[in-house]
Image 1: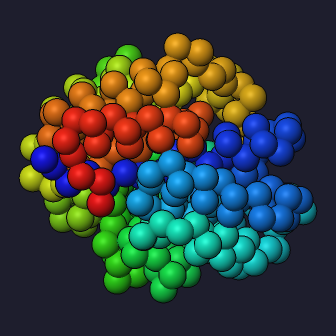
Image 2: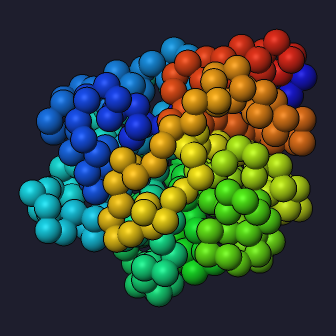
Length: 293
């Protein structure tokens, strides 16, 4: 029997499905204002499904993502709202989510490491007092990894580094750089290393590599079709992507069990992974004799 930490699933996509709104560059941020308490309901549903960690709805709350929008001056308000929504989840731990600056999957738009570190530090220091840990999500390049680890190191909380890899080559970051090249940074600045927001089929090759870090490791995949060229534009919206029909809760749970068989002790879901997927993953883990912690 292995102790497994079960993360929650994809907050942004779940909110879009429930609210019925068209996605915008703000992703799920605007929902907290337009649909009060919807975020907390999604948190509770993931916890009831078996997740032991609630990941705050703060992935896209950065000054640069809010510039030019009606929410430009509500940076602190939005962080405060997201933390409050997570507190009522019932989960045993809250993880403060820190997404990429500028846009997801666009390491070419990411600022230099020193500039990025200061921006990440601002978010990390605001999240830290209310969170058990910080999770740096969808890290797509070495420079991104360096800057977010430098920034979060100022907050005094455990940091989990979640890297996104090519959907067709799990040995490479989205930047094209070798995944192995990030291990030294992870070992110096993180308490766990994960693969996130990547095709589940790409994850085994990535786990083979990050297992060499000697840190606790794991994965949480997305359930999108392959990332399209249309998505890789400035401030993309998720309507450029298509949900996979073949990745049922049962199919997703089978992937997660394979990751655990490879030594993963942290699993969960990313975009388009619903409470039903997490519930089936929890059932499968317990059925295989594992203990969810």
